[in-house]
Image 1 (cartoon, rainbow, N blue to C red):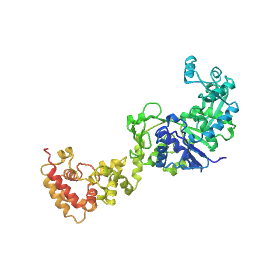
Image 2: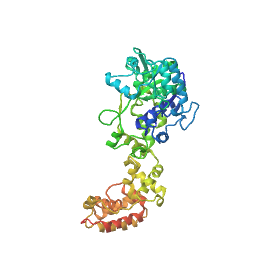
Image 3: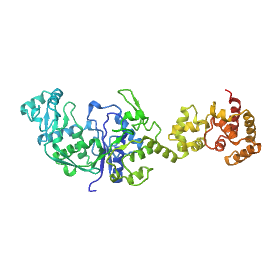
Image 4: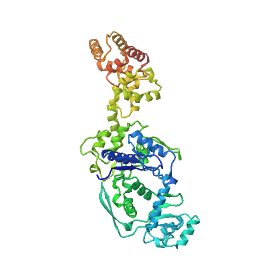
Length: 510
């Protein structure tokens, strides 16, 4: 590449970061890292009416949690700041004036009521070359009138002056050449005097140019804006240094048609935001991937494969491998269905790869939620307990359902198992088992198992009934890891105490 790769992720602080925005940030990051480039974080806060307190901080925290590293921008500094668009007013005014002076834009005073009347009078009205001559703007008003209205403080906007009948070419790395006739474009608003801020269209063109952005990688929903942006680069004389466009496919609903929305997550029970979000306006709380128990590495791997593939069947890839293998050549042009069940599968896979000691640390807060003090158990004990059951879980919180009995002796017993396995003679047999267990020289699984099974055989007892009753007293139900691995970890005293408690408490007739 002739110029250094510089990409930007430029979210608006109008609410939580949607998971589709996360994927856009990820693809920017992968592309930049692969080419030794820079990742810029820019905040597009020019829409003052939609600004939400806390949204910017949320965006930064989410990217940090996911491991998407920012090289320059908000919170990181750099040589091209400021990186909040609201702090760049003076810069934008200069470029608005440049367009006005070169007859590339004009000032419009039309009120909302006048615009509404025009829409009512003209079918499919749009503000363009065919209608601008009948509206109140600097193209139809005398210069003295324009000056007077501005001096008197009348609100106005600056509109881009699009000449009709031109074929505008947009070259997209993913979609190839897209051609649009300029006649279908309206004279977009570039600046509003009401808040002294530009709109998205002007601010992004100016910022991308001044920050030397080489590639604009964004969602498919911005593709209709691309021809306008091409014309703006041309109007400023920047066509030769304009960035290369990449418009990514949408994330689609898991079922039905259309773009993935928060309602889909609420309806089907999965998050659409990376972190939990408390809306300061509505008070509504929305779940996040972090708080739902997803590992950031799993979320990244999952999102990377929604719209891209490495060219083979490989699915599990860490960030380094994603960086190495990522290419727009293997990106889909069509939308990707959001398979949230696949997301759970990725989390399951990544949890299996965690060392038991790390998984134990993640499990400790869950223990506290269930009234168990982790300090009452050694780190080794907790790690061995979770290690026995981690193959069965999708989330850390699932560990309690499968390993909680290691930390809390059962107080109730599965009724179906009691009915099936607890016969009249079972209390006597369990009492005998207690004596057998207390007589063992080694409580290791490999040593204890053959001796206990031999005792059952010598006595002529039913193996399944005795072993299930044994498990029932220790676990509370007939499920769990290998029985003698459980008892090895618990030790003889705890195992015997649980069997005796079961003898006292289990009453089939109840």
